[in-house]
Image 1 (cartoon, one colour):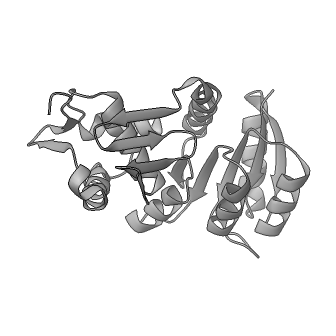
Image 2 (image 1 turned 90 degrees about the vertical axis):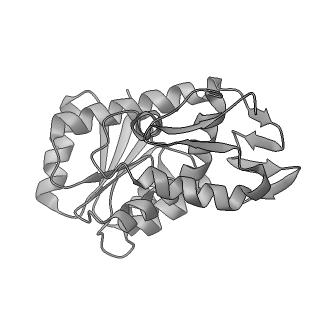
Amino acid sequence: MSKILIVEDDLSIQALLHDFIQNAGYDVVLASDGVEALTKYSEQTFDLVLLDIMLPKIDGYGVCEVIRQKSDVPIIMLTALDGEQNQIRGLDLQADDYIIKPFSMPVLIRKISAVLRRSSTSEHAPQTINYKKLTLDLDGYKVYVSGESIDLTPREFEILRELLTHKGKILTRKNLLQMLWKYEFFGDERIIDTHIKNLRKKLNSADYIETIRGVGYRIDKEN
């Protein structure tokens, strides 16, 4: 049975999450602020963290950052903050998903299941991808151009990984969102364009990403 740490300071929402997720077959542990969350995380092993952002003492961004320094446990962030920059900040901290309140409990359960499934199968993926000047270290989330390390955000890395994994195939924004988030994405699909723009700038001479106007993006294996 997977164990989930729920971090939520609104006690009514906390109780609702507890009952619904427990009834779905998961073992549940509760925390009401950032300090309590980190204390419980250090004392036990969890398969997933469901993390509110607006928390007392230490906010969800801070909790996520501390956890990521120690572990790659899946993290789903919950928040009423629906701005794009808030979403990007959470995802750049390597959260696995960002869900805006109010949300459907059945949809949340399916997203939890998808993230856990993705986590359980990721260890079977190849450790590196090589293409021309590029080397992707899939375990370390690092990218090298001609042997020199390039600093990418987690989402930039994942987009590059998907394009290289599907060399020669055109990936639409929707394709990329589904591959990265593993389920229906309810935000603005143009967030992919922002990531691609930043990725191209960082790759510089090793930018092999081709824009297929009106369709999507690809890395052409014949280039």
